[in-house]
Length: 416
Figure: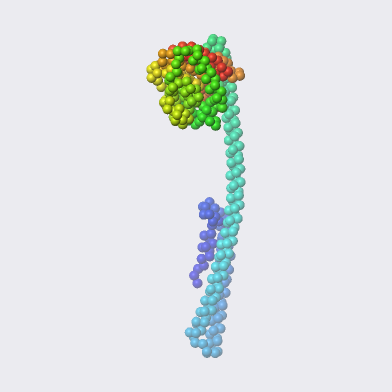
């Protein structure tokens, strides 16, 4: 009789039918379960084998006795009969052994499934709890950081109030940013802008390419609200009146500086100019402007993807340059360069019309500028300048102010 394979079979049973190494029978408790079951089965098996041996011996003796008494069976026939009886007994033993092994494997498998289910439930509970705690911690941490930033801004504003009061008393152009920093002069502002120029424009490029102000339409992405029609109506009114006041201004060619998607071109400039040249820094919006305007309007337009401070129109080729909500995204130095370059493109009677926001919000000082930074809530750079601040830029660009009009939120300037 060959050694039983039951012990090796039982020892190879794993508590994780999924085969994950972390759930094999590796703990002391698991080992004791297998050892105890194996020892019990081994003792039972040994007793069975001993009983079989005794039975075979008894049969042999009985056969020999019968052979002596009856003499009707040959020695060979007797051995064959004994062998058959022995084989039957061994088959019975093998069946019992296989049944016992199968029962042991089944019992251990059921136990492993139960333990695995309990472990999975425990793991799921632990993971859910950990996620909840992590979320709570993240929210608390974010709130703490936000509060720290707010307190730092308030501290800087408090420290800068005396500085701003002194600057205003001296008649200096001054302002603050959304991180609480104070600038007592335009020279101080320019130093900050020049030192951070690359980072400021990089943040703006990301912001515009990601959708700008977003919204449901291209117009809302440009403006941040759904008041495009109202704005166009306001600009139409101003331009129509300007043409009446300046009869020598004949509009053939126009330039939409910082065109974005072409909103002003579509709804205003193409109603007055035969051709319009759109200049836009963002490749995303420059491409979109072609789709936005459509083929028919597009035939009257040309497109350039360029930053305004590096763009130079053909000398004496433009009757009307329209710049709206664009200089606010440029540093003072680049705004001056842009204005100077665009001026060179004007025809003899051509003009440059600028429409920009002014400090109008409640609590704001109309004589101060307000600057948003990439580190602030809006994650971009822009600056709302006062009328005096704009006029300082016009002077640097050697532009003359022909007309100005103050609106509720914006100012118009006619320059040449």
